[in-house]
Length: 565
Image 1 (tube, one colour):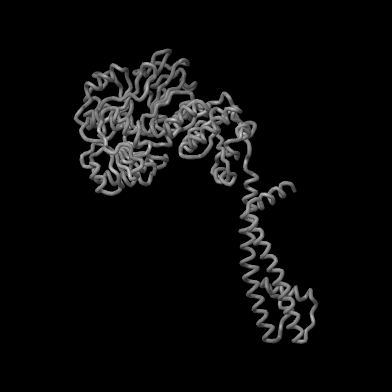
Image 2: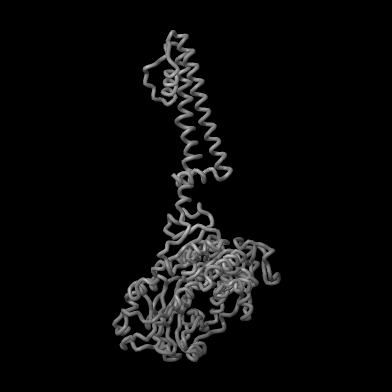
C-alpha cells in the first residue's frame, strides 16, 4: 500500500502531471453530465411514446447505447427517438471508445508506469559489489571502457542524476544508480570507498565538484578526470584527482605523430625497460613493395618488425611478402638499433608540403602546436572565425566546399588531418579529400568506436578514436599493467606470464595462432629480451610483452588468463 501511495504521489509531483490529471477529471465529469443529460431526454421521449421506465432503466439504456453494446431490449418506435439513439451512439463511440481511453492511457497509465519504473531504479550499489569502476555518465569513452571491463569480468556503476534516464541504460544491460553528483551520500551508496576507480568526464567545473565530493567519502580511491582547459588541470589536481587527462591534446598530438612519421623515422611510442616500441611509415621508409628478407631488416639494424597495421587490420610481417605502402610498421628494439634503422631507411624527401588541418577545436589546435614544435608547416581550416588562434596560418570557411580546400592548399599538401568532433562530417570529408587527392596521407578523428571501420573504408590511412584514447588511458591506471596504444585499436601490453603458459615454450604455446597476439619480447628481472628463444620454457618470474588489437587481446585474456576482476 505504501508503494502504491508513493507511486501516486510521484505522479502528481510536477505541474504538468497535475494539469493532466485535472484534464482527466474534467473528462470524467463531462461523461457523468452526458449520462445524466441523455437519461433525462430518454425519459421525456419515452413518455411521448407512451412508455414508462424507471431512472435506473434510463441510465442503463444510455450506458448500453453509448458503449455500443446495444442489447435491443429497450427501443424507441418514433423517428425522433431513433434519431436520439443515433446521437447517443455517435457520442458514446467518440467519447467512451476513443477520447476517454486515450486520455486515461496518456495522462494516467503512462505516467503511472514511468513513476513505477523510477521507483524501481536503484539508489545504491548492491552490498556484494567490490572492486568496481564508478562512472559519472555513459559517453563514448565510458562505453569503450565498459566493454574492456566486461571482457575481463570487471564490474561498473554509472551514476545518473535523472531517474527517467536510468531506465534505457538498465534495459541495455548497464549497472545504473540514481543520485545527484554533488551529494556525498551518492558516492557512499555507490560504494566509492571500495571501488577500483572513479572516472568522471563531465565539464571541468562538474568534474571538480565530483572529485571534491568523492574525496569526502573515499580518501584513497583513484580518481581520473578529463579537462578541457589547461587551467583546470591544477584545480582538479588540488581537488584530489589522481590523474587528469586532456584528451583533446592527447588526440591532437597522436594525430601529429602520424604526420611527422612521413619522414620515415622510427618514432618511439613507449618503453618497457630497455626495449623501445616504435612506429614507422612503410611508404616513407622506402620499404613499400619490398620484403623484410629483401632489405635484411634485423641483420642491418638489430630491430624486429613485430607487426604491420594497415587500415585497421593487424598482420604479422612475413619475411617474403611485400610490405603495403599505406601500412604502419611496428618495431621493437634498443635505442641504438632504432638509430641504425633511421640511418638505413629514413627519408627526408617526403617532408615537402604542408599539413592541412580541418577543424580548429582543441584537437586541431593541439595537432597544429605539435607540428609547429617539430618545425613542420601547416594550414588550418575553420568555419567559425572566433575559434581561429593563428590568423596568418588559417583559412575561414567550410571545408566541404572545394574552393575553400583549394585556398587552403589541398593540391600541394602532403597530409590531411581531419579533426572535427562530428563523425558524419569526418566521413564525408575523408571521402571528399580522398577523391580530390588519391595519393595524400589522411588521418581522421573518430568520436565513437563504431565509426572507425567506416572511416578506414572511406579512405583514411589512420583513424584516431577519442573514445579509445580515453578508455585506454583509464585502463592504464585500472589494470596496473603497461599498455601502449600504437594506433587506433592496436596495443602493446605487458603482463606477468599467465599460469597456463608457465613451463611451455613460445613455440609450444602457439600464442599467435591461437589468439592473434604477437609476442614482442620476454622480460626477466630487469631485462627485456626482444629476440627470445622460441624453445626456452617460460618461467613464473617472467613477463610477456604482446602486440595485438582489441579482439586478439580479448582472445588472449580469455584463453590464457581467464576473467579478471
